[in-house]
Amino acid sequence: MLNSKKSETLETYILGDDLRYYENLKYLPLTPYPSSIQSAMIVYCFRGKAQIQVHDSMHWIMPKELMILFPGQYVSFNEVSADFQTITLVISLSLHSDALSGVPLFSPHFFFYMRSHFVYRQSETDIQRLFNFFGLVKEKITSSDLYRRELITHLIRYLYLELYNYFQKQETLFLGNRQETRKEELTNKFFALIMEHFRENKDVAFYADKLCITSKYLSMVIKETSGKSAKDWIIEYIILEIKALLKNTNLNVQEIALKTNFANQSSLGRFFRKHTGMSLSQYRIASLDGTGEVLK
Image (cartoon, rainbow, N blue to C red; front, side, top):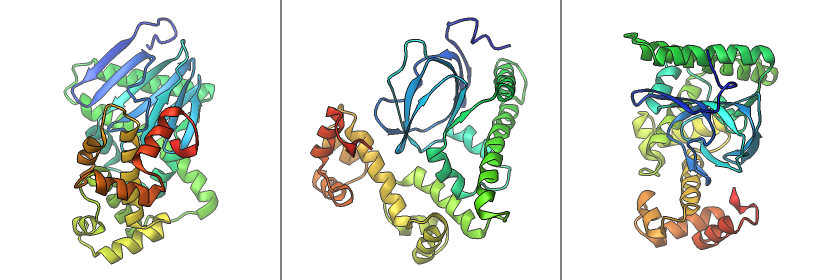
């Protein structure tokens, strides 16, 4: 039985490198500046509030709200109230991928949707089901069951499928019922590859080769399924990473160039100015003084 409403003591349960379960967690393991998260997170807020930004969408998470974050999203966490408390699962990329596998491939539109639809208000019935879910996860983490990882994988998959079911109902209102196409399958694989390789590989040809198709065909497919070209998506992830690193004042420009695999500071600066209209120093200053829309 969960005791989050009875105690403010932080409780932590760990399943190897795959899962961390927190009750009464106040400070989520996120940075105050946008950074690409490497784990999935399932967060239920039952007290207080905090400011969360995912890509360009900002939200104050409040009691009775469930937040779902996926690996590769750019997230920041700020302005936490004194009484903010959550139940939080931090899920490794490996466990997250396993939870998504074994079922029909998720539409690429779902992952775009999740960039702006990451918080869900919970009814009283939803809350009871959610606490049952957390209770089962906690029970399996603390058990000596031989297949507890597999059982937890199925529990997380269940939650993801519930979320996807909700998304599909919304999508059906606009698109009607249809089966996923081969092009959407390629799009899914392309985005999985981007999240893994965008720092080292900026050329469409690399991803096309991984998918055993031509660069021209990959560009056409991604444009058709997502509305943006493959090159534009690669650039978006690189720019988001550079912005996140610029907001981390512990890193100088040379270190950022190394982390993002640019030959030197000059090539990094030219790339950033070309795609944002700003110099690296202009963006860093603007992001630190708290003014202007450039903080996105």
